[in-house]
Length: 207
Image (cartoon, rainbow, N blue to C red; front, side, top):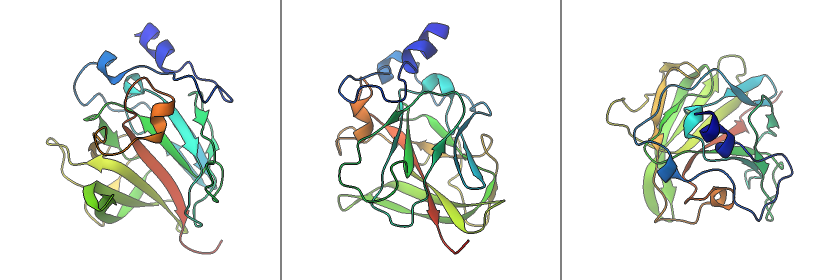
């Protein structure tokens, strides 16, 4: 297990954007994985995001910019190593979102203690690809934590509006397999297609 984690998390801040890191999904045992440990990955103001997937299933972590003008800058925290992707013309904060790579089918848990305020279809290239969950953190009413790249898991119900969720305890769905749908940005840093769960914090009101 130590060797697996070492291979998974070799990437350091400022690491090469040309040399893929991480491990392939094929090297990770099949299944949904365990509940994630209580590991912080980023902070946005008063909101602290926790790891949403089993740490042993991570293929890579990358922060990236966004085209959404309401995105909030994320400050990486904790001990997990990560990439920062090139801006590629996106005008939002340099670290407006974070992608956590894991094999398709990996269970995704809430990254925050929150209330579900929205569950909607997530559309990619004109086709519904799973759903998007919007969470209102308990300690910050002026932002939403938006989780995408997820779909329903057979053993867990789809979240519902008004539901209270707990970081690392409440499942939201599972990582989608988008390998045949789109070239995923995270694949720059993995040895596979780059399937992942995506998290973004967006502002909904004034400070």
